Figure 1: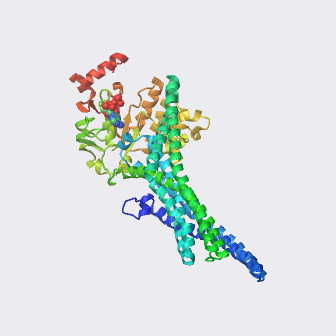
Figure 2: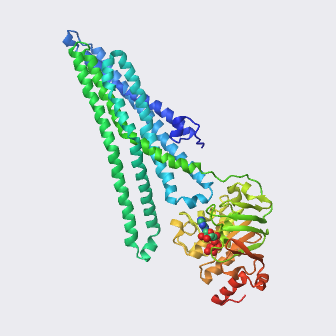
Figure 3: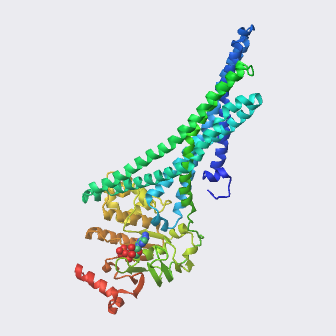
Amino acid sequence: MEKTRKEPYLKNAMFLTDKGYKDLKKAIFACTITNFSMFIPASIMLFAIMEIVKPFNNESISWLKLWGLFAAGIFGFILIFICNKNDYKKTYVASYLESKNTRIAIAEHIRKLPMSLFNSKDLTELTTNMMGDVETSEHVLSHVYPQLIANGISVTIICIMLSFYDWRMSLAIFISVPIALFIIVASRKIQQFLGKRHAVAKLEASGQVQEYIEGIKVIKACTLDGEKSEKLNNALLNMKKLAIQTELGSGIFVASSQMILQAGIGLTIFVGTTLLAGGQIELIPLLAFLLIVTRIYGPINVELQLLPELFYHQIAIKRMRTLMDYVPMEGKETPIEEYNIEFQDVDFSYNKGKEKTISNISTTIPANSITALVGPSGSGKSTLSRLVARFWDVDKGKITIGGVDIKNLDPEHLMGYMSFVFQDVVLFNDTIYNNINIGNMNATKEEVIAAAKAARCDEFINKLPDGYNTLLGENGNTLSGGERQRLSIARALLKDAPIVLLDEATASLDPESEEHIQQAIGELIKGKTVIVIAHKLRTIAKADKIIVLDKGEIAEEGIHEILMTKKGLYHKLFSIQQESMGWSV
Ligand SMILES: Nc1ncnc2c1ncn2[C@@H]1O[C@H](COP(=O)(O)OP(=O)(O)OP(=O)(O)O)[C@@H](O)[C@H]1O
């Protein structure tokens, strides 16, 4: 979906896809036809009245004509039904299709954005973009824009046609329309101001609701009910207050404009009866004008009510545009032949221009071997390992895999070469089978089960009521920490990527779980290029290479035995752990 600014005004203003814009034009046409079809009953009725009043002029009624009008009426109703059906399809169905396409486009776009975006935007904001803002567009596209433009077109055409017949009556009918519209348009700034405040309050309230629900366990455990409930209550109260203010603000202007519009009926009757009294118009044309007034004022009234939604819609569009304007990470799908990873003079900072998180790193992670990253908490181990996967791009220097600069690689292509086993395992609300299958969607059932067995998951899965078909619930909350981690290892095993990133895989587990996981990891890393972050230094004492980080820089590197003889930071960290845990290597 391309959404640039040098596009037709309406397409750009409404943030539409090409298909959405085409559908909108069709919807406007369909609505205009429907508007005109609505005049059929009124016209038939007028002709029927003209026929029925003939005896008053000493003329006889033509029953044939009346039956003809009756038949035309039935035909007219069928035509209205067809027009309405077409109108419905072109507006409602098309707008739902457009919102689905926009949501997919936003999701696709987000997927390609650097992780830094998720530092600056919280999840509530992104959910609001994808659900709330698109829903606002959907509503405006189905209920406001086509009708508004179609009504504008039909009212203008009718106004011109009536002017040819009697410009004074035409003026009386239509003079109030631009004045009523002007009141709404002039209030745009105020309504947008109120709408923006309401949108911010809604976002804040959604954030509070999400935090409350997600943190319910901690809130209960720490008896924070009072404090957190108060924050939530305040956010909800504020949202209610601003919703009322926004409605009131828009209500005042809408009601005033509707009053002005209604005054048009009085004006038409006044001008009509004056002209009738002066013999300048006949009764039947006057009745026709009055019928037209009632027919066209109805939809205009509704439009006046809906117009403020266009102003709020602009706020939603601005937010979606800001999101879509974030530049995605790009690159080519260059094949990687070898898996040695080189860091060349790499600097990186989460907050540009502030203190560096990673500084001046130059080192090699040899292919088909295990390299451990160690160092005190906050020294940059996780950051360095995630830079290899292009979660973020380096600020200076470069990282190459098999000689290819990863900045030139398409992020998704690069991910294809990597498996991750992170401490914070993410499981989807799906079956166990599908959660493993995510690692490789092309895998056969046998391969999925083989991966589960190799990751030592098979035993606990078979104890579950539905085995592999057991539903995990939100983020697999029904499983233990060790089981969740083994599932993520099974997923990684199934992916069978040549590079494996292991982060803190056995940090907080009991000895039995740890044993299971160590066995599973043993399967996973066979013949792979492995980067492992482990706080339990004993587990990585046999690594092929150990890189010791301190404050984002390399303090020392080598193998365990050499580092121990150097009596540097590694020796210090190792000795502290050995003492506190009573190990021997
Ligand atoms: N997403 C982020 N945004 C901003 N700063 C971050 C982010 N992630 C980490 N940091 C900061 O970067 C520094 C390095 O963090 P990192 O997680 O890489 O260290 P670590 O050595 O893996 O720590 P630990 O062993 O405690 O997990 C820390 O000061 C941390 O606060």
